[in-house]
Image (cartoon, rainbow, N blue to C red; front, side, top):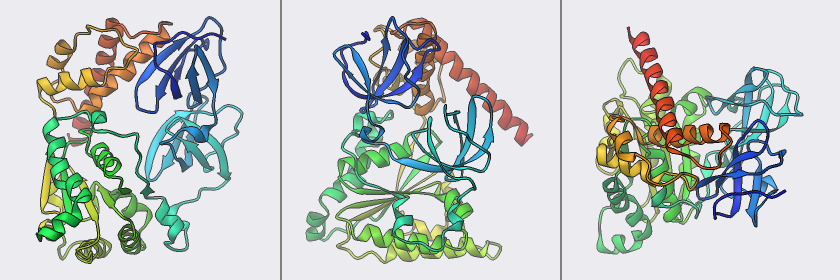
Length: 405
């Protein structure tokens, strides 16, 4: 079977397949994408790993996809074509796998956010079922550095990147030189800003460029799934990080984990804050570990965590301005899009949009192109993608106002 596409080749993953199988939208390991076209139908499915070369698309083993790790989740809801899966305390919608019988409550293994590979257990397995916190448990939060990420992947302000390099990347790379000078080590940096502004992505990029081991911890996940074990989990993660040559311990939504302590605070919350303080203060000067945390409510974080030697540095991630929005749209444009698209006009109409929402325009545009059996994203697809995301934003805003009203 002969396929037509642009000049990109290499290992890729299938993101979208047309109903007749003749159009396949793939994403390469560097995040770029393209649309492949053939006169004959294929049997590719979303999530397949393929090798794109010499006008051919061939299936490749799933394990060749470099940045992908399997996840374990619990089936919460079943529909004919879609499945709702709980993964780490969050709900995700993905296609119903063909050839696999699923039931509500099954524990399943999958890849990405579109591939359920197999059923592990007929009944739900949850973190709280584990007898204790051991090395296997720690590995669930641990991610080795990936050379595939770069600062070019960050869709945000160049000023944020420059400041992050100063506060995080440079101390990780040159901590011995800074120690010889006698500089006080930077232990913690707080990322503040609205959701979708790239806080988690930038932390992972810094870990990648610094060749640091990355630990990602979700505040809501720990409080919901690790009640009674959360202090031990935090302690052992920090102990494991101290064994690494370089490490970043990353807390997402730390305001849900380390709220202001008071007489009315829950005892579990007070213990977690106490353990976090003890862990950060317990690092010796020679340990090359950086702690990063994100929040959109910095005022809710316990004040003790903002004192010198803890999270005493802050980087704010604002919503992009007009020029930044246009730069994000241009930078994230896939290779499968035509040139001379109206980025300036779309940037004018997307005030208060986050970088994540701007990048989502391209996913919607690709769907329009594939549905119309085209291998290029045209201006009409681009505008249609913008309108789709704008409609979704309006609906979410209306739902939020209804909840608050």
